Length: 289
Image 1 (cartoon, rainbow, N blue to C red):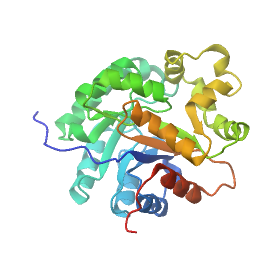
Image 2: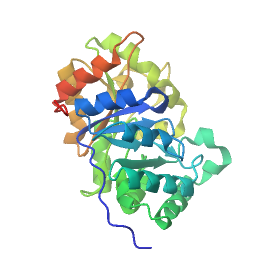
Image 3: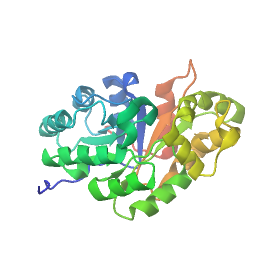
Image 4: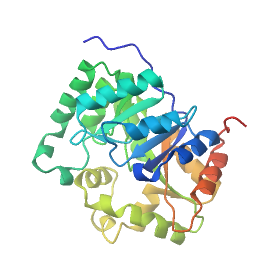
């Protein structure tokens, strides 16, 4: 079918990725006021998109993106209906990030993730969801090509600036590239690794991420004991606020259009203060000031 004319919602250069259960309207409003361009809802948002709509309704400018809707648990027709509901009420504020999740969690149905994604995109197309409002959580070359050909682009998770450069080459110059990047606001390397390493542990058991790390040159002992120091240092940006901002901009220099910062904190950290520090270091312009 002919697809509706539309443009991809604006993301700006820097956004925030955060687990869905850890996001409320008050946080979204603070991030909006600080000047962040997008708020990515992690942890497989449901097809009803009720949280996304609530966050959009409670803010004025920030784009809300799903990072990511899992195609195995979210019905495509319901997701399309939810998109149209929100788009009619809040035009241009929602970006649908969708993906196939982790093979270890899907069982037999994960044997053909590519064809399942193609079928899912067909349903969205037939329901009139603009391709400019959809991105794929693509890691491997085949899924990157699908993101290029069937959606606005790619939202790769747990990657490096080196990966971003490779992904840009695979996508070409047009499609959106919006990687996620872990951030720890600690200058001391040992402290930063202690904060960042636990956030990687679960992914070191998942084949799709391990294959991608291997493509980046890691292997063997890098995947034991929570991840080697070189692996942690590559996947987690830390240091002074200026160094962290430079680490995020490394993705933009490598070809990304936007980078979604996942702030990793320790108990007792003031996350609101850290989001404000990061916004200042990156040079964001506050809204409504």
